[in-house]
Image (cartoon, rainbow, N blue to C red):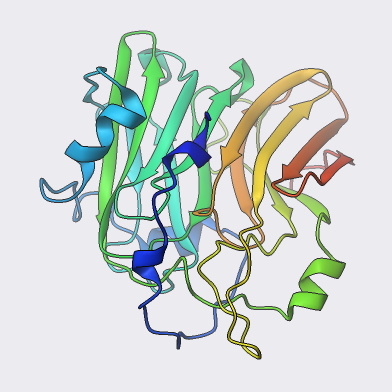
Length: 287
C-alpha cells in the first residue's frame, strides 16, 4: 500500500479519548485570520516526539536540510480549534527555485501524513494555506523537494482531540451536500505582476476520520474522507493533493498562482468510497 493511508497506525489506542468536544466551525481561510491566530517564529519544531520513529517510513534515508530560509510555515502555537488548524506555506524568495512536491506531516496524529502534494510551474513561488486536524500536541512539518535537494520546515502546535471531534453537521445533511465544489478569487496580497492571482476552493465533505462517534448512537462512524484533489487551469496542472484523515471537514485550500490566460479552473476530487466529482468554474475577476 502506498500514499498517506499506509502510514495509518492502530486507532484503538485513541478510543479512550473524551467524547465531549466543543462544536467546530469551518470558515473560509482569510489572511487576516491566519496572521492573527498564528506565529511564524514563536513555535519552532521541538526535539521530542515520534519523528525519529516515523521518518524512515515517511522519507526513507533522505536527510532534508533546514528549510526556513526558503519556505516559511505559519501555524498557531495554541490552536483555537483542533479540528481546523490553519497551516500557511509561503516561499518568500522565488530565486530559491521551484518546489515540485511536498509532504505535510503531523507527527503525533494516528495517520501522520496529512497530505502529499505536487505542484505545477504556475504555483511558483509557493503560497498556500489549508486546514488540518491535530490530535495532540505535535510537531507539524513540511518536507519539500527543491532544485537544491529536500528541505524541512515546521512548527510545534498545541492542540488536542482534532481527529475525534464531532462533525459540525448532521450526517444526513453532510452526505446530501457531499461533493459540492466552490471557488473564489481574491486580490493578491503581493501583486508583483498582473498575472499573479489568489483563489480559494472548498469541497463539501464530512471527512470522517474513523475516530468520531455518532452523537445519537454513540457508535463510531467509519472512516470516509477525500483522498485526492486535483486543480488545473485549462490543461495546465496547478497542484494535486493526496490526503488522509488529518484534512479538516469540508476541505478549504487557498493558493496563489500565475494566470495562464485560460478562463476557468477545473477541480477534481475523489474519496475513499470511490466517489468522484469534477467542476469547472470561471476565474472571477480579482476584486
